[in-house]
Image (tube, rainbow, N blue to C red; front, side, top):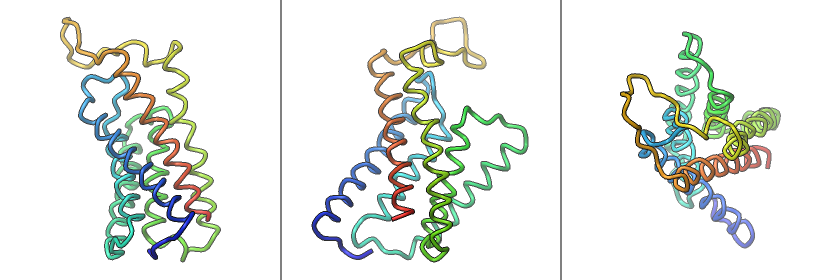
Length: 194
């Protein structure tokens, strides 16, 4: 990727900061998963990988030789996710669809999205933009009567009180990653059509 100048450099730095912060937030969610009421380890791991791969893609001077292997990794993630869902695992309220679409968009981007023509970029960008809703919806549920209000009973949990993060920390690890992931999704859509 050529070194940008002026406004392009500021945009690139903002995108790097966004993708890096989303990666860190999802890493924190993975670490705190037993204490979260909305833990989705597979989705958090996927978003961590997407954010880290986008940082790699945008980092000035990063070698492009890993683009094809990364395209294969994200393509395999799409196939594995789809195979698990076909075997009967439940799709989780749009999050699984958003993760599959995000991984598919990463596959397109790393496989050389510009070579496929603008149509593929616009289709992928439209699908990405449509999948921002599953990331924004939990933010609306958090203060209401949604699933973030109470701790769900875990399989095999004893009758003792479960450990949960304090409300402020819980809110931070719900709102910040969802907002960041929505922003990352829209930024990826923008990158596909520019």
